[in-house]
Image 1 (cartoon, rainbow, N blue to C red):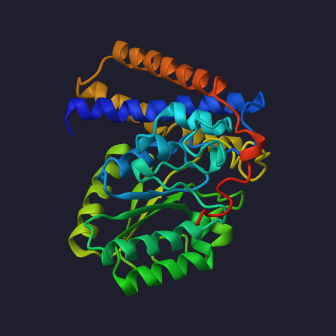
Image 2 (image 1 turned 180 degrees about the vertical axis):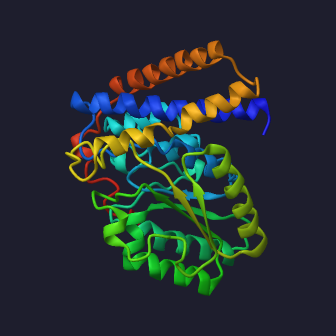
Length: 315
């Protein structure tokens, strides 16, 4: 990694953090409706993994997908407009905050049924293998999915068919609101039957190093791999969550491991950035998010007569 790349990675993490903070504010003002799951605290995982992928690789996500979408390069304007339910959004306003899609970026978002993205990823990887494409399917999911049958089925088929899937578990310890220690007999989540590694998901450099090695291994062998990123969401499961299952003291302890200040300190020590440049980044990001907000506010609602469009395929 050089100075130029370091600055880009910091910019991406800061953009995620400030975008999510603004989205939370807009949610309280009823500008954004429905369930809303914030990615605050987990930025190093999305940035660290996705920067190892090529444009031909495919990304599937979870409900907490805004960070993944930004890391994949989807325009914040399109994401904000989608959250607003506007036609200009990346899913024409039909997906909202939980279902962001952009085929031009090979980003296929999350699925309405929890854990189904795992099975879809295996199917897409099998298709890629049969079409002799040299790409991988990167599927993000949570520790909650590991307790479900879809996880076991997906990993079994991926290993049986020897298909190129990078399963990335964002282990933020609490699923919806149940601690891992209460839902898993083995809390070392990597011991699930296929090749796997675990990494500190709060440390961008470590995530990048491990993800780079894993992606290379998948592309050279064509076989699946499970990467566990041990991370922590600083906010509740969703903005409807009263969060009675964890102590505020524990959250504050994890905040001291915030991936963004950690990486800022690394860049400062390398003399690749200055405090003034960090402040300039913040101003640039503030302007970019305001632009996205203005774009969403000015967007159009879908006409009522089009609500049945796309429900059935046109033959």
